[in-house]
Length: 116
Image 1 (cartoon, helix red, strand yellow):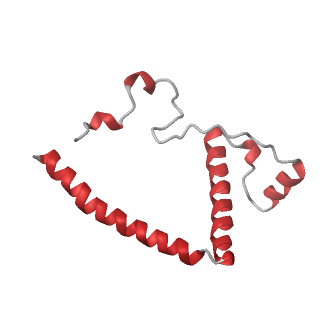
Image 2 (cartoon, helix red, strand yellow):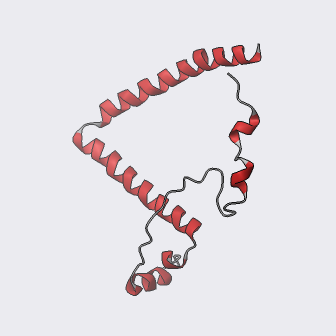
Image 3 (cartoon, one colour):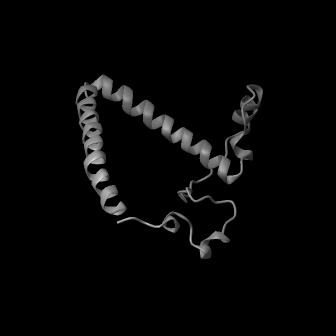
């Protein structure tokens, strides 16, 4: 049941393919949307970085932050406004409890068996 440490590393045949990629890279292709000059000028006035001038890794981080922020702002207030916050809280509480019990019993059992 125990996996060797090499199971969590990239095979040698894949190491040299892309030096800029990391082992945690999701390889998601995001379309680049160039902002108009009027917007980029305002970004410069406020001391913010221009997304049009970012490399791929920086642009992925920028896009990921935008997507995560949009989802969080959309889901959390939306749940509160529609009255779904209480059921979501109940489900989250049950999931955390279930995960903790599974980690102790299932994970502990698997650790015991793998160390035997």
